[in-house]
Length: 393
Image (cartoon, rainbow, N blue to C red; front, side, top):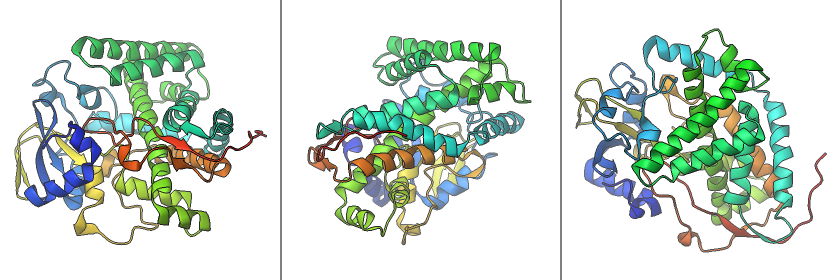
């Protein structure tokens, strides 16, 4: 099974159904050309693996040594001195600092900040009757909010974003290396500036934490925060929006008050989470799980989307947040509350002004980004009755 084909990107749920019929809860796949892995599509099996860091550590270095230096999936999977890839005491040290810094974020102030950024963006297109809500709204809103949270100036944020896009769109080894160097350099400049003049932001809080990280560790942690805080967040915004405009029953119940925007977000986190396949683990020794043989050090990738929709754990999901979209176990995402404020406030602001949004093209003509990890449209063209601009107070 190829996770990097256009067919998989167009209809991953059909692929998961085929996998389940053919292989059961664990599936041999190819995450990019000539890079094998095991995809976990069983909910219970995923929980067992994510809750067992001794047998299934997140450290990829033994596997990483076996793949080409510029393998296209390395930016998503390679080792770094961060809480997501370290183990043992190093993991505890990074995780504690990461969590403590995020807990300092004032969620009430964050909600107000999202509104302040959302209103001018909505005003830029609300009178025209059409927009690409990915490129004109979700992306710039998310990037500006994350820049403020992390402590990036507008200029530094623009450079970091440009570098991230260059890295994401790299098509060969040279462009991948250039994108990585550019992204690291942009973050390094910000960290150096925050060492000299700290502020009320996440990078400064990481620098000031009692763990006393060196610059390389701060840069690596900031790079993870930036990459995982931007693209998955803006894709969650548009994936939730797509649910609301393509599912008539959901749309009607939302407008009628039977469901909330939070319900829509939770439904998407079950059905189409923006990181559909992630949480890679690397067995220390050969393992047998669910009747399948897992080779030592070969990636075991959790299909968050497929596990959430495992028929073995089906049922009414309204108000149920048992999905795996944030991961599970000791490495679950510590930024859930921050991400949810951004996404919910972004949707609240947009739908307050433009409640009658419709897709400008048939849903089956939307283009989806290729790749094993993200569930992401390449654009979300919409139409709506023009509305007057808002005044932000």
